[in-house]
Image 1 (cartoon, rainbow, N blue to C red):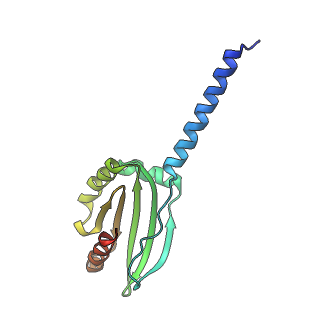
Image 2 (spheres, helix red, strand yellow; image 1 turned 180 degrees about the vertical axis):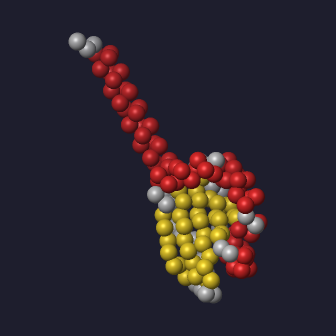
Length: 142
């Protein structure tokens, strides 16, 4: 079979577009994960975990919002554990979708949205006063 120059060009365009789509997809899902939230000194980091891109994709599907990254940081505060999930979405619209999905499952103080980022505080009811203070702290940071 003899290839014409146009066919060869078309093949390379398809390869290029496929590669570009793949690279864009990887960068969109595996976006830059922000560092753990900078909390007051008495909030000691126990563990800090950047969620792998494959799991971010699964979480995106479950929550119905397009996410770029997720970080789970566990803090020890006054002898009690409080987790903060930093969830970064692709845009403000998806951050709002995420807030609407999570709001019925959480107390008001457990969620904070700043632009494309949603901070989700997790812990038993006994740490709610700590969550309120932590949320207020994060809300005050520009």
